[in-house]
Amino acid sequence: MADDDGLPWIVASGPPITTPGGHCGYLGGEVSGADEILAAVRERVERQVDVVKVMASGGLVTTGSDVFTPQFSIEGLRLLVEQAHAAGLPVTAHAHAAAAVDQAIAVGVEGIEHASSRATEEQLAALAASGIAVCPTLGGFTTESLASLAVVAPRFQ
Image (cartoon, rainbow, N blue to C red; front, top):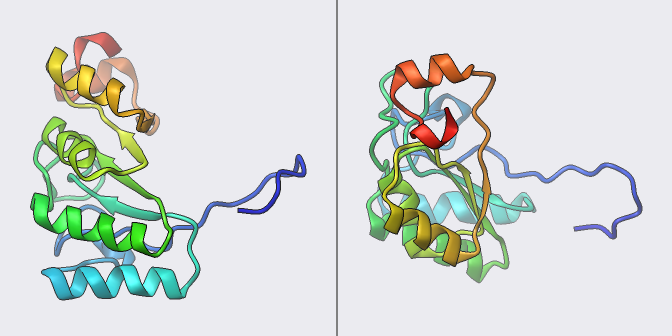
């Protein structure tokens, strides 16, 4: 990144990497299997992105994606992170599902977007101990609407 001269700057990721039919697949980052994961990371490296973004779980705005489960196997997510790190790039994971947050911690991402599902005290302690930055963006939902979806733990209510 450029030196901080006090002016705003953009952190570019390109299309997020997701599974076929997964969250934000319409943006063009769908992958299936190791070869496509490698190609997707390589493409982002060639485009000189600042960070690789992966959709580790489904999302609220993509019909058919599951907010409550991981989209990638742990092996697939690990491969993606290892390749990005080998190229000197950090990885941020969109992860609503607690299990997807667990995977993101296990493979060593630098950032987690959302982390909004109910988590156990052990999961929260692991997340805190990991030092991973969490951006708890919830996209314009009200506390009432999130509670009605049963997505957010009581600590957010």
